[in-house]
Image 1 (tube, rainbow, N blue to C red):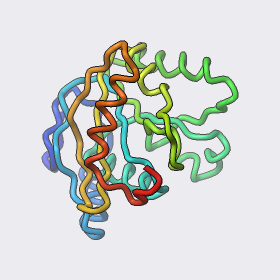
Image 2 (image 1 turned 45 degrees about the horizontal axis):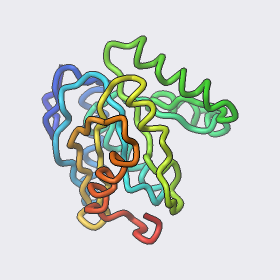
Image 3 (image 1 turned 90 degrees about the horizontal axis):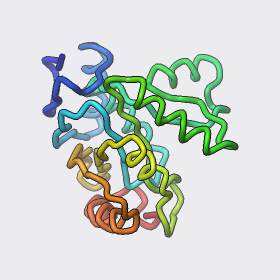
Length: 198
């Protein structure tokens, strides 16, 4: 059920968490720093959310504030070493999944199981795989979307306009290189915090 405080259209099939207080908190903090959320989230219960361009640790902070503001339930992965103490509890609450990346094959299978076992499931990651400058995007996000047979939800973090843009949805093909070309053309219209790293 969508909240009365939704600030962009969110369909009833989208997994949700939180309530009025957490949404108000997220929205007020974003507004305090001059940020807005625009766009829409297609009413698809299962998607891979890719956010970018990813060039700064501030991208994660923005992401958490957006999840709070919209009341979205989104899963994501992080190094197991950061999931310690009270901070680890907090990260898990916001959808974090601690992983040891020494076995990427098992990680891929575990993510697909998340899609299989849940009626509604959104998994988020950066298509670049790092905030450092990269020449080639990592194929993990594409493999997950293809393996789970779900679309990509594109989320742009525009630091020049101070706008987080949700949408559009992108249906992947079996041609990774062609899809990445189209996706990069979309994200090239968005101004990252550190343009030299994108």
